[in-house]
Figure 1 (tube, rainbow, N blue to C red):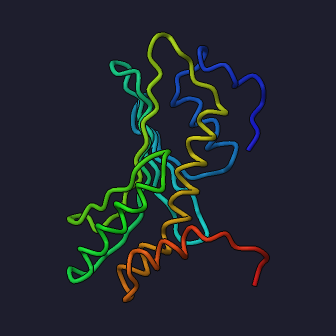
Figure 2 (cartoon, one colour; figure 1 turned 60 degrees about the horizontal axis):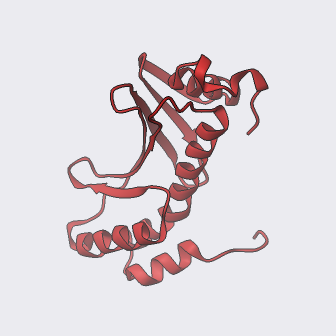
Length: 167
C-alpha cells in the first residue's frame, strides 16, 4: 500500500481522516460514525473482517479492533481459550479475545502517541496490515479448534507454518 506524499505528515490531519483517505484509496467499504471513529470492512482469504478504528484525544491513543464471527461450541471452549492464549504468546503486535456472548473473535491493538507525536499514513497502513495479517494467519487455527477435534498445539502449528508455492 502506498499513499501520496501529501498525506504522510499526520500533524496536518486528524488520524481518522488519514484512515478514511486510505479506505477511499483502497476502495474499502467504510462508515465514519463520528469525527473520532471509522468502521471498515476488508475482505481476506478466509473472512470479511470488520475493523473499527477510534481516536481518543484525551489518551492520545489510536485504538483498532478487528473482529470476525466465530460460533465456538461450549464443548470446545476450554481448548478455544487455550488457543487464544497461545496465539497471544506468539503475537507481539496485539492480542486476541474471544467474545463468547457475541460469538466473535476480536483482535485489538492500541497505538499510544503522546507528547505531540504525530501519526503518518504509513503507520496506519502498518497497523491495518498487522491486524489483517494476524487475523488471516490465526483464523484457520481457531476454526480447527472450534469445529474440529484438533488440539491447540496442532492447530497453531498449522497456522504458523510457512507455506511455499500454491496448490
